[in-house]
Length: 406
Image (cartoon, rainbow, N blue to C red; front, side):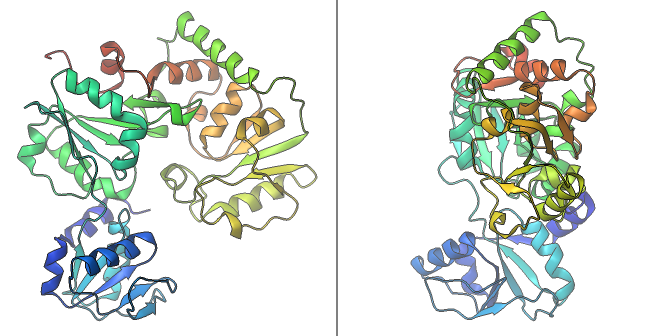
């Protein structure tokens, strides 16, 4: 994970351009996967000059016959122009390639990852800027009703990829800036720009119990960086605690009469999850975590569930742990203990009153001894994705959006 200084340095070496601009350069393409495949299809369709060759991590099946060279990660790259074949990790790629390139190499980014289906909602003069790596996914799945609510309150919402260039004047005149997650290096340039302009940020992220049904807003960040991390939670009262009790009963009713299976449940996370990379010791992937857990529970039954989005799940080895793809809730309620890094599954386990071991940094560690207050605060803070009316008092408490003048 790039630190702030290296991310900003990499950003200065990146040149944003249009697809048609590639006709002016002899260039190579670096990268692999779906982004590269779709980019090549676009170039062919628009009859734009193709790369001289592609530097790939492994050979791909492509729609066009272009030379593919396997990248060994160390050889010098002799190219005047290098097209970045990634939609989320441009800064990491630039930082990795710079030491291997000639001093005058230009790193091109055609931003095929920028929002396509959603660019603006509403037509008001006052606007809120929304920044997200995957806005075409997160807006319809989480924020569409909230943005419609903002429209009704006199704000249009403009959507951008974090690496799109926005002028100081445009950001300065925004009535608010909402950032989805914001903890990956791609966000560093725009977050630094907003801070320089003294623009307060509001962070958004998917919620809990279950994640796909809720989202939350926060003044400081997400997960371990959120405002709940430093909140004494003294505002949590009987009403919030009662809501927690109701939620616990609802979740428990789904797994009625389930008896303990006598195992330790180990939920894995996506290795590239910013929560893992920024707030744990397992920055080299899940295999190290599996090895660690197996070394602790040498004589216990262990049940491991890979994250459904982990593309490396099939590569993991185990000495005695069993693999399961069963429903997470069922695995939690059948466990004697849940041992994880900082997965949201740990919060679900605490909600189910199953003992947990937390390896990484997260809100559970910040609030040892008052887990119920923390869970009640998390429940209160979030919004249901299906609601159409939003309490301004909660928005004011957990965001830097000012809706009073509208």
